[in-house]
Length: 268
Image (tube, rainbow, N blue to C red):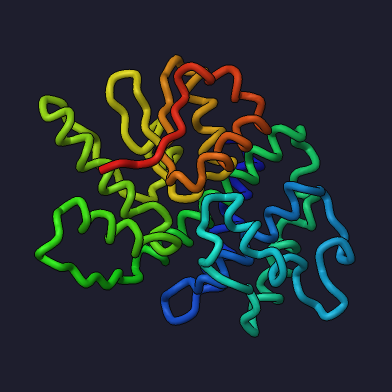
């Protein structure tokens, strides 16, 4: 990790600490941070007028917030608008901490984008942890089959667990399928870089990525798997297959992984 990268992570950590109220980081904070860093991915550096509305709000924190969040694997309905009383000031402070993007001026475009994606991943993990603290309420009918129960669990988890429930179910399925192999059990929202792992589950050369809302980050991880000689398998809900394919095309890896990159519905 170079000096700029290390300093950037420290800046983000300090910003999160400064936004902590009542020992907790609000979901507005994670969302606002993602919006700010997304701005810097699209244009860097930025001016006040580029990112701050005449009313003093960070552009994108209201209209279009769901699309920005979904781009990075956070469920679209995580938050409708990042409009708490403190959010605009928090967003402006984060821009200032990164000197409106001038902090990254010594980096190449690729280095800057990779760094910003890593910072966004840290915030997305925090958003997923927030979602993980929200309990799911289920009304299980014992007359139904276990398959029906699992279907109900998955349905109730949509847009709420950020893929945690789905990951647990896939892990259980893999353990049952490969009963003679120890299937790694990682924390659901620990970042791959933080845990030095190549995906959610690894069995021999197969690397499984489980997500309810595929974003550019997971596609890039699949590309890294390919470079390392591994075979990535991306498990997404049926409704997200076309989005995953489109993202792979945008990253230019769709043809490269055509024969052994699997987009599929998660069946239990």
